Length: 146
Length: 356
Image 1 (cartoon, chains in turn purple, green):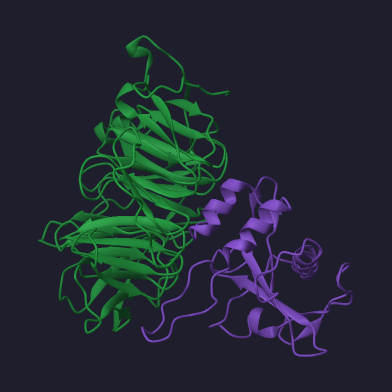
Image 2 (cartoon, rainbow over the protein chains, first blue to last red):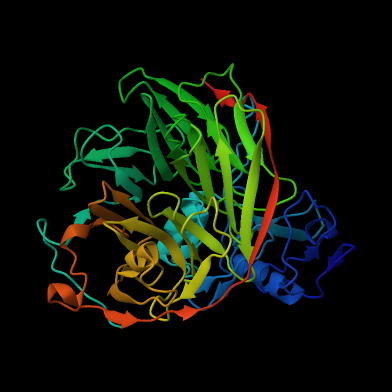
């Protein structure tokens, strides 16, 4: 378990992106989304690399990935999340990622969230590049486990 | 087990209702027939043959519907992005209240009429029909017991209260009472090592069954008093479990591989005739579906890829006693999962989260 930020030694094969394992999402902040300890660092990076390789991105260019377990999807987060969201760092800084809860969290009535749960186009793209099945897309779109 | 395929027959056991982009299918909240929630956020009301009754109702959220319920003139539609309360009925210029935060399902508490919405690790939301932006939304959760509230059912309690049972993933099953204007309530829970409980259903009275993601089943004959649940697993039930349903006196499991009817199992359990050694005729319907619901104890609706799959439960061939054996009898493995019971305060928080 990372207690300090640590960068993966290799870069993604498509875009040459760097990747940072952040302490915040590896047990350093209990209020933050957290990777399961069973997910090895190389596995976490492989999800990121595949997201980049398959260009599974939302309208902002943020990347999304899943971890297949045979015909099923693995839970990657401590709250049973199955989708990882990866966001770019500042200019010249590496990307980082975390398990993404597929349902929007409650918020105050006067502040609608422009982005929260992954956009539909993300799941459509995942089907297109055969990361998930059509039924799994329907499940994830509804906020359910797949 | 190859399974059984029935002819596509509007008057038969199985009928595929053609409809694109459906994300939820269940009872028409306003009367006879069905309601289909769409990936676009809209709703289509149909008769039992799937013929639309009027134009689809468009939604503001544009997110896939994952739950629909109706209480005291108000309709609640949930999606992963928000919770929409529409009243008093599906009419033009109707009142609409939006809660900015996603729900995973919605049911109606039978006594209070409140909408009960599981919202994952954040807890369970209780929403009064007709809520305004001046009234708070109630969310209950426990700091001590960690449940990921994924599905709920609400039953009439013995003391003019509502009893809410929830499937809380690896946190197990949660049980809590609810009354309007109550200040605090208690959460009881039972969890099992290695069981990831994804759904729960009522079998009448206070008997419930729950399903784990791997197909393991948990039975409680009376969740108010029983402390030794039965835990079994059928080898014939394969795939990731999506739903566990009880209809026509039988249990059904929808998985990523198929829909399974577990015929005879609930009866043995409820009547105590199995002496803890159960068997079931497992009928496998090889369908691809993402969700399912029961309508009026007669229809089982499953959300297919480009259709809604309608099963007539009464017409399903169920056992050799009826002269037809389509399934495969199996004695489940008694997995003897040890229950761990806990009790905690179910803390209520409230806030003005609704927008009119």
